[in-house]
Length: 113
Image (cartoon, rainbow, N blue to C red; front, top):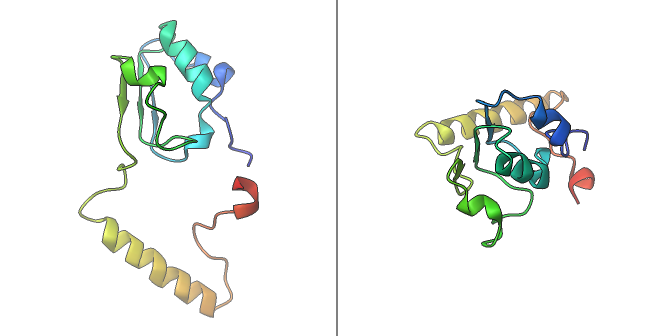
């Protein structure tokens, strides 16, 4: 997909040295090799990552041992309102389907396989 490795070395290098890269979206949008290198070189202040291209993140990955990196187990969407949001999206997609309108939140499986 067009967003794959969107946050590569060039993009991340444009961040402020005080900046934190936060990814709670799709793991594949961040080039982890580039991010790891830039964090090791102190080019940015840190990162908070909830998603990875390969999950779980391998136990021997250097990000686990970096004090300026926060790793969470794909739980960013967990909130008291998530079930309500999912239900609303489902109901909206049913309405759209019945009216032959484009559906929300489609994933192109071909692009991700």
